[in-house]
Length: 249
Length: 187
Image (cartoon, rainbow over all chains, first blue to last red; front, side):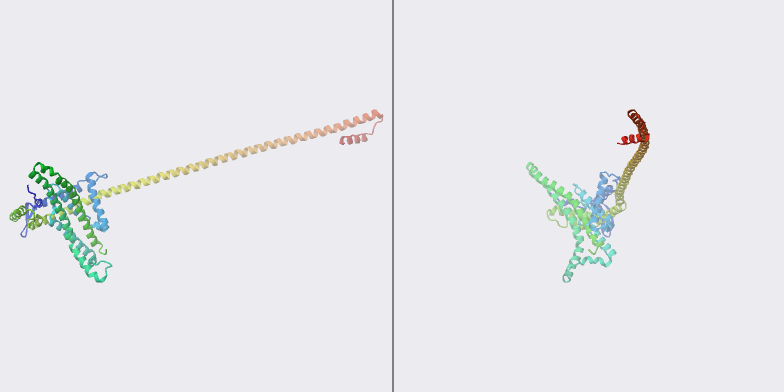
């Protein structure tokens, strides 16, 4: 019995959609799980009814709505509500696909760097384009902090500009690395149980209790991480958008 | 297409199986041949999700929340109005009660005053009548006494004249007898 913690991240093309240049565009298992996430979100939000006294499903839908709305209001102010659909889509997409991804034998969309980079760049360019369109050149005042002595201002500006352009990097790698590492750790510990059992027989199965307990604990942690990383991604998006909305701060 | 993916996949599989621990180019998240497919899928499904969320989901859920909020606020306003109404009714009842009470008191006072006045008037006329009767009676008594007294004088002077005549045999002068009787009546 061999542990292969990487196998779960394989991209398997299911059928071909077409070609762009010399790239082949396929509908892959990743696409399937994106579709699953979109379907779950749509069912949750659309099939949950609009009763005065909400049922369970409607409560979940409304709690998601209120949760994202209050996050935006507290970090980006009332003006940030313009981006409510974007942030809600990001949060729900990441949260639902992460939670689906912890179910054994499924695929985790955000465990692929290219996906998280795509989402982070979407946020980055939204901030940049909206910031410049709304504030003009004043947007670039976010690189000039107030109350910094003149002689270190160039250095501070350099750091600010660098950190601005590094935002999509940290934004995407944080989510990707958390999901990837969590799934690898889960797979390794779960694999230990089977490996001990098959190689050492009865003693191995008894000894496997420890990694099994760790797997259960890690699994609980991963559920938390799945939600938390979606929340972190959403709140960072709010903070970046706040720069575009209020560049003076 | 089948070639490019067919080529990439066995390579990835071979790497993970052969290299075991260390991850080279076979690490799926860094498999650049799958990037285009994933980006296109992401674009399609994220745009689809964005459209569903912004056009259908958020207006629906937000509308339900707002409707509930409005309903609660409306109910609270209505409850407040009803409460105000009942308070006003209570106040009206209390003021009505107070005015009725004061009216009753006024009527009571009035009727008592009237009764008192009537009683006073009746007593006064009665007293006047009694006083008149008393005065008349006193007058009668006085006149009767005067008459009686004058009769006593006449009888006394007659008796005195007779007594003097009997004792002395001289018929006394009427005037002097009268004077003597008067003097003794006075003394």
